[in-house]
Length: 559
Image (tube, rainbow, N blue to C red):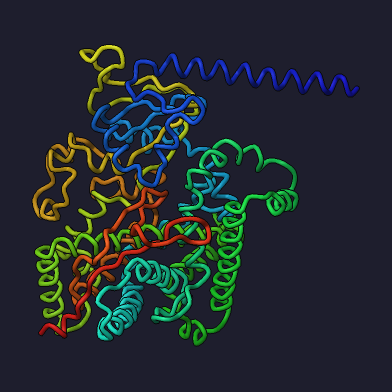
């Protein structure tokens, strides 16, 4: 009997190896016509360079040399595609989104970190969750939480003002933007305070975990194990057994991620527990809750209570949304804000024009905060935000895997790998091919945005959108941009993100002037693009500390 078992196992392994060899041969043959760089390594391919934190110039040069679709090498020279052609992205995200699935390691990783949530689900389960969660981010609900967002922004303003008036000419805005983004999500999203936003308050462990998670998960030393080892290992034994293995494996970076996830899970349970208790109590208790029960989580819980049994989300799904919404929202919002403030410090004329618009809007309201519709439609504020999110999308790229053979159409033809005179209008993409969707590539595509696509020009949004932009039919859910994706996987919290950015930006620009600090700012190409400096030092997880030191002056002090 043991010999039969061994024979069966050997046969299975042999069949798997033959299948993988055949698949690799088929992929190489099918994609041979697609141009791309020579592989940097027979073992790692181009993955190390592709995911390097200083890889800006590498990506830029590849896009310049090969255009909107090109081939690069993965592990053991497996052919992958790098794509930012708008027509191809439209097929991936919209027209054939069921064929281009999130990679297995991405789904498994998100499931382990957040539980059953939007980022960890696909197919019918994803549609069910999105149908329930999407409506709670409607403009009507965003209007309700606007006062809460302004209160949080004013607390931030007062704390920064204390630093400036005390003579601290340079302020690290990266830390403040992370903290205020978390508190906006906490109060506006969950009716729960996560940070008092006072100067010397210790950083909430939840903030630390969320801030470091994206960097740790996309660390070059973690990418390959995550992509190739995580999916099979996640199927071994029970969750308790896998946790035992996780605890005993001698890998500090993995243990750091484990500890971050534990903190996030415990905080999410506290948030959900408080929200459910408030809903079960009388109206007076609900009114005493932060935001008076108008936060996103309270609305979601009430909606879920009224849903049919088929549509209702279980407790585990509700819990998973807290961590995923916080993770998706905090890093992207905080770094979108950080980048905008950095750009304003380098462009004083844009800063002055924006401040004048904000001051006039407040004057029209006799000194009161602008109403929701006014804030969201102020032309120059909107232009500054859109242009920053276009040129500097906080998330640079995402992965997909092709589930079946596909013909991928192209908006702009590319040269073949064999003959520059021959062009391809479409590409045969074999099953199993991994694709990097370059969000920054599409947002900077000169065929779409023009020759000045790599320049920061808010004024471009004050004019009618170019015909080339409209004609490209970029599948983005937000202003012809890929920043918040599109199709069924579009970011559900895009309106909440816009609201947070505009509230904080308007508050700070009205009250402070910004100028470059004494240190050069370096933007690292992580899973989320983040700022640091050369002498920032390192965290306990081995990453450079995040820093954005800028010179600030109070507006009142200048009058």
